[in-house]
Each structure stands twice: as C-alpha cells, then as structure tokens.
Image (cartoon, rainbow, N blue to C red; front, side):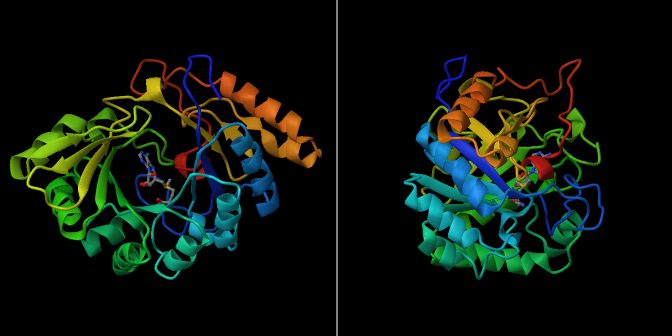
Length: 325
Ligand code: SAM
C-alpha cells in the first residue's frame, strides 16, 4: 500500500485490548485498573481484519494494548497470524504476565518481544507503575523470553525529566549485561493526565552524549522506516541502544505504520484526529473487497506528519492506552 506521500505502508499495530494491569504515572490518570473500556473486537473479527491487511501487503504485525497479555486467547491469535504468513510478528508488553507465556508464544510463531521497563530500581519501578512487586516479575520475564528464543528482546524505556532520567547510564549497563536492546523513547503528549511539557522530554542528543561518555557507540544502519536510531557498543559488548525520538527527530517522512484499535477503528497516526470504523463494516457482513477498499481509503488519508510542540497542536481524542502503543 502506498499513501499519498508515496510512503509504503507495511506495518500494522493491533491493540487487542485497552485494559491494562499497570497504571504508569506518565500514561494513566490513576483510575482503578478496571475502568471504562471499549467493546473489543472478537478474535474472529480481529483475524478477519488482519487477513485483509495482510492481503494488502502488511508484512509486520505488532500486538499491543493496553496490556495484550491480559486477554485470554492471545497465543492462539498469534498462531493464526503466523499461519497467514506474516513475516514479522511481535508483541509489546509490560512483561508482568510474560514469564509463563514466553515459550507458548514462541511456539505459536512469535518472533520477538518488546518489554517495557522504566526503571532498574524495584522501588522506583513500583512508583512509576503503581504496582507493587512488579519488578522481579518483569526481570524474570526478560530472562524467560530470552530462554524461549524470542530475539531480540527489546526493552522500552520512556524517559521523564526529573523522574528516571538519572538512569540512562544504568540502562546502558543493563543492555550490556543482559544482551538486550534498550530503546529510550521520548515522552509524547498522549497521556491521560495531561502532564506533558517539552521540558519533561529527555532529548535524543542528551541520551547519546551521556552514553558515549562511558561507552562509545557505533551507529547501526537500519531500514528508513525503523522508528529507532540504533547503536552498538564500540568495544563489542553485547546489547544495543535504540533511541526513538518522535519529538526532537520525527520520523514521519518514513512512517510505514497503520493501527487498529481494540474496538476496531483504523488509525493512520498516533496523533490522528480521525478514525475509520472498520468494526462497523465487519459487523455489517462486508465482503473482503469492501474491507480492503476501506483500508486503502484510510491509508490514502494518512497524515503527512504529527505536530507535537507546534502552535495549534491538537491532542487526539484518545490516549495511548486506548489507542495502543
Ligand atoms: N502495556 C504494554 C506495555 O507496557 O508495553 C503495551 C502498551 S504501552 C502503551 C506501549 C509503550 O508505549 C510502552 O513502552 C509505554 O511505555 C509507551 N508509552 C506510553 N505512553 C507513552 C507516551 N506518552 N510517550 C511515549 N511512550 C509512551
């Protein structure tokens, strides 16, 4: 699929639920974990949607949420996607429930996993996630994912000024010691609590400079559509550093992504102000041809870029946990 800016759209992110068992301070307003949630597409509806995206050239699917591992049936869904011939299948998870699911997911056809971890200190981790005793579970999940052959294991770290920005060096050490890819993410204005300000963003340049001081880095060339700028350690240590810098180095010009929310809406950008109701079409019994025409129309309307930090920037009506990160 090509959009009107001649970008090739071949990555799909599917949010399988907007429920989450963590209430990270930079994401959630702090209401109880079982607050109001959108009506989820059934697994059959999700599979039908996915097969139509695949027919249109989607090669990579990442399952996310909310917390995708909360939804029973995820392993079978991964197997269904693998059987559709999806080349690259991945999951983004907070890792809380991954330890026991890593091997079954791998057997079902999952290739790799991204685990979110915003502190290497158990106490601070509990303060960020507002869940006690999560840290050892997530660390165990990282180990079990590696043992299950999910590779690479990537660790997502959202850096917040004054909160966990003192941990850049510790996370670099974590990458080296554990042979994982640590990806620092610039904080985006997609949170429920409306706390975002540019001053809270820890920029790409600072992250690179601070790691370079201790462990010189070498840039790893990647595909232009990759969200992260990647580095390995010059001394040959295992592990890798990635930096996802949507605020200071936007990558919209190479964006290859489209999203499907848990309630069946297509979103062509995290910051879209418009959604495309695929759920309604699926439930009306539409033919595959009509579904594919609808997807193509949405893709043709993909936004040129986001406008974070510009005057007049408008937040989308839904926040990260409801869109799917
Ligand atoms: N529950 C899963 C998890 O924790 O990875 C998947 C969903 S979560 C929304 C996906 C990723 O988005 C996580 O790594 C999370 O830290 C990140 N994230 C959430 N809010 C964000 C924000 N405002 N800016 C940047 N990244 C954010």
